[in-house]
Image 1 (tube, one colour):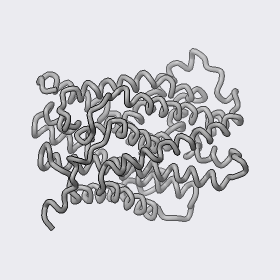
Image 2 (cartoon, helix red, strand yellow):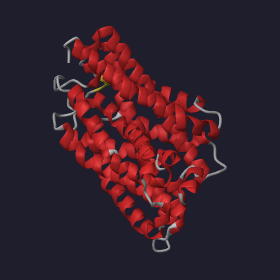
Image 3 (tube, one colour):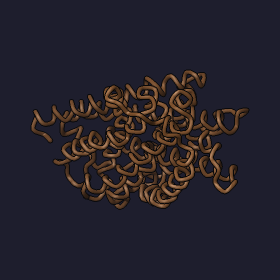
Image 4 (cartoon, one colour):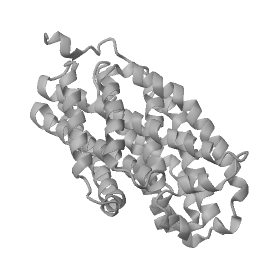
Length: 372
């Protein structure tokens, strides 16, 4: 097979910025469901439902930072090319490699946590590798395909996912007890401000989609992202409000998957099994889009590192990324307890360092060198 035969042509595989943000919205629902509200409740207690509202301004500042970062790039360049401008060809490639390795690690983590979630809630006697393999095969097919196809898939499922949340929250709200959420006092100010950090950290994963800007049509970063940002923060707010309002803060913290437990305990026209099936489908779709998106980004980054700007993705790069994610999912944690520890500490801390330290440092170096 010729070299042309193993390339994935991406010059015509471009999506709109709105499609990119819609794809990011679906992908971000995966960590939101997995990490929130339990993570926020650990810090804040019953007032965790306010964290989503308070996170709007910090998330907006993150969006403006991304806009400033990408301001000087050419239409066919993404965040990777901006790294090369800011740091030079050598250190720029090292920076791209660092972020790519982290995203591959995170993809493996998502595969493993997704499998663990199924085992702990639905199939207790199953082995994780069944679910890991099934999800990875689906994501691999999406990674080998065109970005347009993944974007259209996200566009189709996005309104369905929103409808699921609307229905679930509507039927859950009548069971919410006010005493589990109120009162809110001045003493809650510091914990609330701290609780904003995990929300912003989780939603800031959208910054990684900027690596796909070389395959995205020009558009308005802030305006096109605003609708999805508001929707995500509403999901965070009602997710915390319903789970904490029904179970209380102490019980919510002790649950690994409070959202799923809540679903099993609300009545929607007496259709318990069907509701659970819908939620399981929600898990599968969001994890699928997230892992597929990471494979699309990482495979493009590998080709950028090896061949430089303008390089087209290859099928080999996708296979390499999928293999790396599989290896991570196998060796990341021997037990569910160890996986839970990584979810609480290593993953959010590492992500925060790369997003809120690494990116600003690269941006500052690029500005000082007058390259961006």
